[in-house]
View 1 (cartoon, one colour):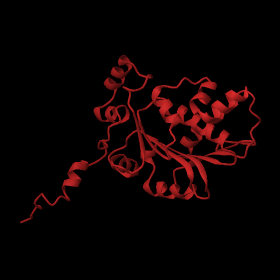
View 2: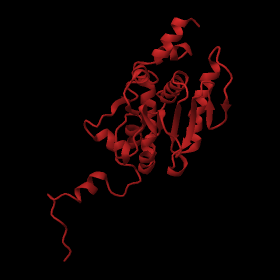
View 3: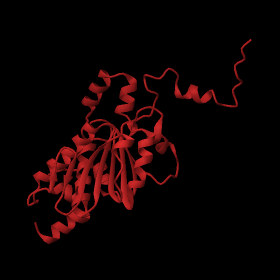
View 4: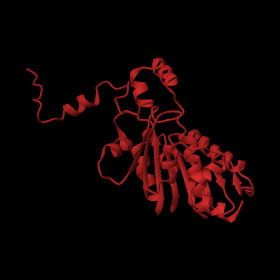
Length: 249
């Protein structure tokens, strides 16, 4: 690889991704190139978010020596799966040296950087600091206390990317999307914005699922979960001062 190409890939994650054979869609280019320190990605299932963030993770590890990249998901298995994708891309690159450490939960690069997969539990994520990139996968299902524990780990020059399909109108991921002017950059990728879906595939998926699942998992709409006894609007209305309380006589 020429010095000019190497520098271009270091400066541009999209060029880096293309060098691995990845042809990014428009929304993937925007996410890969985003310099925002705090990023929310509300995305449908099977649109390519795991591959995109795996490339983002590897780019950060390769070009920021001695820095950590953390992957946090609701379960260790989910985090390990993304790390597996990161490692697979690395092994497919030409001229990369042997990894210093390579196991199911950590990939250590020769430059001192690490990509580490962690479970979404408050007790299993402590001990890190100065993190360059934190990826929160299936973020809507990561509990509030875990999110609060993770935030101090990210360095002032670090980046947080939280990706998820919606999971009800609850939790920090939903609250951040609803808040205005909170400093988080927002991306939204439904099946209608993804090249992975054409009209026939969308119709097939819609016909196979209930309205709640399709609107949530494929159109990225925050709605009530199907396990709720009372709707979110009904619960909120019960605290409204404009509705007269029910009197029992």
